[in-house]
Amino acid sequence: MQKFRVATEEDIEPLSETLSEAFRDYPWTNWTVAPDNHQSRLAQIQELCLREIALPYGIVVTNDNHSAALAANAPNAESKVDSQTWKRLTSLLGSSQASDLVVGLPQAAVSNSWELSTVGVRPEYQGRGLGAGIIEYLIDSLDSQVNSRIPVCLLYTSPSPRDA
Image (cartoon, rainbow, N blue to C red; front, side, top):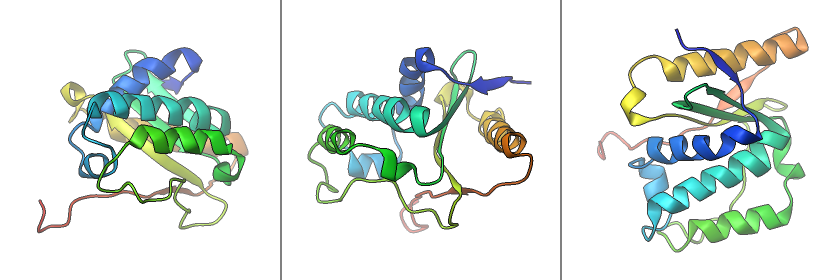
């Protein structure tokens, strides 16, 4: 059984690599992140989001070998992120099919909820229950912090059935 823990600043670089590997062939990142230096861009985007959004305004979770990563943002995290961070994120996206999009965190479907912004497992570790385990750790951690259940929302993208 995997043991998960709250990540620290020292975990950010290896977790950025884990997430960039996990999302290497993901349709959303292939559409939103420019194809030139795509994998490097993904790692830099993940690092920026973990270091400057999730770590200060939420929670980052991992395991000791960094094969799984999760980031969740506290309610209203978007309003706390400075404009320079959004500009750097937009620049890292580069010129892609989605270049005209406005960058920002999605709005939660449930007000005053935490948002599970990303969860990823290195491809060679997928299928072992790490994704479910790290999400369970997050929910248990948040519930114990406030001594009651709190909502956690996940917004996701997936190819439509005709694209699969």
